[in-house]
Image (cartoon, rainbow, N blue to C red; front, top):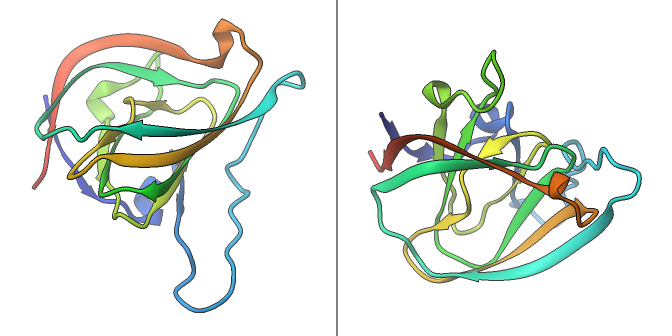
Length: 156
């Protein structure tokens, strides 16, 4: 299977999360509709990560989810980021046949809704530093990884 990554836009990404962009004019934007912690004992977790770039096409065979927490990525210094998401399959796990791929601009952040299947963070073009926010309680329930049939993601 092969996915063609398309530009990240709000309407297309809405089933999976929220696109985060600064307002074009002076002012502020609020992004709280997808922020969620579904466990009372989980604590906020903010970290900064540094990732080397990866070239496309991407070969993927592992997806993850954070069943009880949203996960937010904000670029501090980045080029484009590749997002790969999949809805739930009727029998559980990710429905890879309905997966979608998106490319952020260097100025877009994003939040995955809790329980959203996605590929690990993949940055393109240049090394990237991003702030990552989610709620964790230090247990295995913080994240789940599943192997999926290998698929490829490329640019148009």
